[in-house]
Image (cartoon, rainbow, N blue to C red):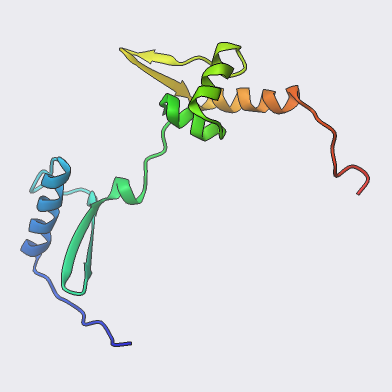
Length: 126
């Protein structure tokens, strides 16, 4: 295994790389603004890459789309629709034309499901 050479880049190189990635990702970068960086820059084998921090550290969200809500519960979107229709899962909140499921309501409904179907406990008496 050969040791990797440590590369030194000037500030302009990093700025150009960040702006190129931002342009490709359609992300607006404001120059001259002093704040926490919104990109993570990696230099490996002479290749410089930058990724948005939101890709590295996703922002936790309270509202989920239908597919995300189904995935969060651990079921298919069609099964999720059945549970919403029969009232075992909450309905969405509407924001303009968009339907969003509140993660807190999903948690409460899921907790109620586990109480609704108390099957035999195979661990009893162990």
